Image 1 (cartoon, rainbow, N blue to C red):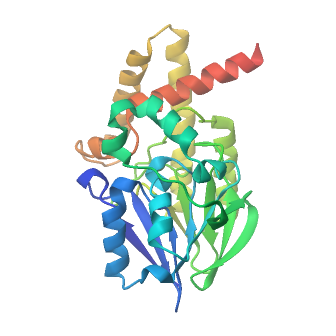
Image 2: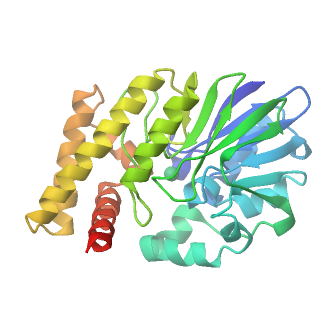
Length: 304
Ligand SMILES: [Zn+2]
């Protein structure tokens, strides 16, 4: 199997959202569709690698957020033979995206169209639900195993391909730019769960992939180091936000503080100052701080 990364050129920016193209001898599969606004880039990517639309038999979705799966309805029309594999909790929202659109509109407001484009349903008979208990799915001449990996979202899967050793990790393995070592934790509202995330990092260590491929963006071989950095940063960001909340800081202040902290860490990790805008496209500090605040509030409520 050959694995190619298609750069979906999100909003004209390189290396923000990837779709991974898996090529077997006479079959092909995709991991992630990207958003509808990325559709042209995806089509071009398939063309570039000589893939006919009818050859793509499987589309694996790590989760249903619009930057990962937003184009699915359009892709179902484009790729007539593709079956869509998605977490059982997210699956109903692919067949009927009305709630998904509503909750995204709460976050993105009037930028919805510009960011994500039109969202269409995927016909129910084209969808296969997975629980992520290690189910194996044949695709592109290999076998993919699906692993439940909550933390960034409840309904999150990572897909492992044992022969190549690749793990397609969606957002649960963080955001990282090619040529950089810094890993930014994507913690937007509403479903961030730090405890579950820790468990998913453990699960990824147990899978012991040779490479890890975050959708934002690329493929990395230093799996152990990458996961350690992510785990430590999640922990230190949680403590940071909790302390600020205890001091009575407002959301804005917390988000500004997290940005200063995060950017310092990024520069220490060898990134360039201009990288922050690039990382922001996949997860801005306002959203990242809000997600952690929401997690802390929810956890504290549960303990009352
Ligand atoms: Zn994402």
